[in-house]
Every structure is written in C-alpha cells, then in structure tokens.
Image: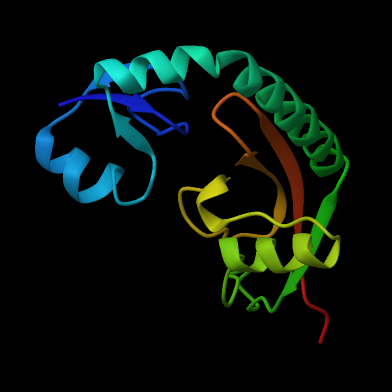
Length: 149
C-alpha cells in the first residue's frame, strides 16, 4: 500500500515521505494510530498544498526540541543504590528511574525516547542517549554511587 507519512516512524521514514508498506501493517497499525494516510491523488494534492504550513510548524517544533536537548545535556542525574561487600549492586537504574528524575526537573519524556539497552547495574558514570526526535538527540549524564549504610 502506498502511504504518506504524517509523523516520523522509526524504520520507515520521516514526515512527508511517500512509502510503500505492507497492506496489513498499514491497516492494522499505521492508519489507526494516525501515523500515515493512504496516498491517493487527492491526498497527494492536499499534502503538497499544505507543505508551507507544515514546514513552518516543523521548524517551530524543532526549535523547541533543540532547547529541550540543550537542557537535557546540562543535566546530571544522581542515583544511590545499595552495594554488597563484593561491589555487586543490588537493584539497578532503569528507564523509569530516569523518567522520574527528569520529571522532577520539569522535563517530560516518554520511555521509548530513552536509548538504554539494559538497566544500569554497576556503580559509575554513564551517558544515556535520549532521542527527542529521529534527528534530535541529547546525552544525559547518569552517576550511580554506592549507598552509604
């Protein structure tokens, strides 16, 4: 099925691109979530007519996300976890912990934006990448220390 992307979709493309996807994927996932619209003659014409408005809105959105990325890059999150005598950490620092600390700093992000393969299970300094958009990312410093008894 030929579709127009209304929003950025990972592994498919960016807003405004025309792509061919499998019919079932479009009908069952992309269309119900409003991520795409079928690429008919009328929708293609309407899409091209509204291109200037979309570009202006996208520029404003990207500027706002750029500011958020700068704020995120300046933040250092600190966590304290109990550690055994052997130096093995009990528990971990997960995406949910990072989200809670960022929420306290007045920054709202979704868990899918955090690029963390697995929870942090060691004491030390780490950098966690946060993808606000496919092209706009920020790195947050995470410091995990041993909890004093």
